[in-house]
Image (cartoon, rainbow, N blue to C red):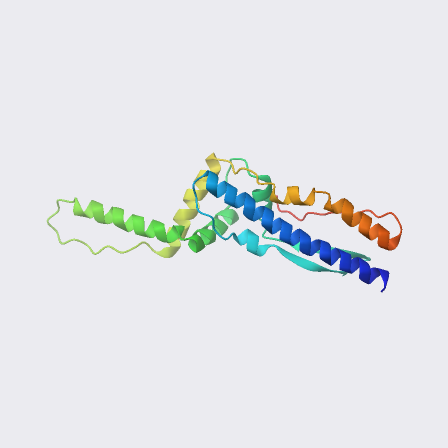
Length: 194
């Protein structure tokens, strides 16, 4: 077997193990956070987005990637209180629609308006009330969540840091060096939006 194929095989095994361990670490951390705040454990979109990309030749070297949603950095490192960008609010709005927050807002808003209408002493015919439009409910949910993020920080989970710093890089370096029978330097690059 050629050296390059052996290296690719080692890198692919490394990446698959990194994928499994990162997913496990994320699930464990999120379940612990949910238990601490008496929330329910849900299937994370971030967990589902973690995917290993097989090793390939790229610009004179062999690269291997582990990709995940772009907000992983905030889950891993946390976030200080502060404003949420317009782009962030639109992503929160989409997330709130998938988690049912927008629908809960529509229902609670309708109930409040019906209660207010029932207390009215007006002799006019009562207006038929409808739920607020779904898009408006998504924006409302995004606003409420963004307001909370402005005043409260997100605690870091270090789900990726703990996995990548557990000695596996040194082992990978030794495995590749054993194949090549030379010293090797591993360069880890993070593509993040800050």
